[in-house]
Image (cartoon, rainbow, N blue to C red; front, side):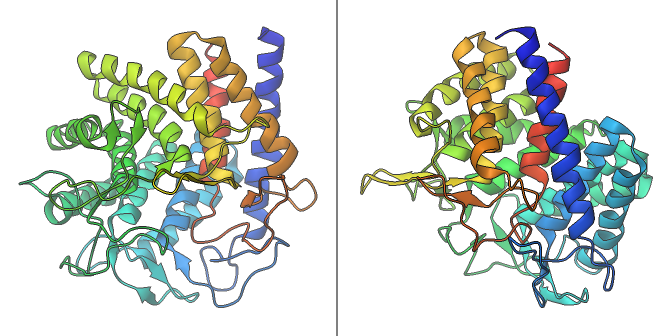
Length: 400
């Protein structure tokens, strides 16, 4: 690919980031009556009344706009990040027991007080980015406290790993599921992936020995348990004793993990782990090709036991594919990875971006038809995957 083509790729990504993704979130999602951000915006950009406000949504908004401010130094991005930060520390953080609440009512009162470790991890991730954006020492202090909460209450010191969920006061729960579609198991890849991501971002600004040890431990858990080294694909669900409980293949998580694991190893600075994770990133990118359709879109999931393919193409795996394949190209020099990254972008432009009403559709079916019954913004639909992919690729192309 020529330098001119790469430059055009970067320009298109920057336009998408600034003129569609960030601008849409600033226009439609702030809750100017009750504070924070609306919990649900439908595909027609209408607020769904009564929807709860999720910790993950707010933490991802905090991260995205903090990162955007760091990249562009535009005041409106910092203003949006500050809005998210103020709401999180006022309403989501549990002042009595630590951690963050899972879900709030529209007025900020608690709807679900459970401690979903995934949500606490994303809050650490966002707070660390916010500190890097504006130097707020309170944000760093809260992030350190949340790290300690997870290490004390959620980490399994005997068998290693982290449990998926606990009660408000950090007691065991019977139902640990992150969402209705997940299996009710105690140790899940998805939660560990985002603890890894959060600890890595916090380690950028806080070189604490305990944090360094925890980050290294997480990388090793992926190398020993979560990545099947024969298939170069992820194992998703385990019980407390690391017995594998699922054969499900998630193509989006595979390609997302490939570059996040490599990033974490680079932040840790262990040459042996970095080499191993770099090789694994390329191998995982190769393996994920099985999920990429001829139109450039990445299928959602595959169920080996029934040989059933979920051929829908959700917004977030496409965003992660752009970064994962580009990372594999940088590590290997294989041109096909660069072509796959660009192919993901071409698919996104053609099928996923709502060119009329803004942002991206939740998903499209195998024929490319958007699923308009799903939200534009909500508990899981956030500016983090697509916003981050744009920023990550812009940086990588500029540093070429």
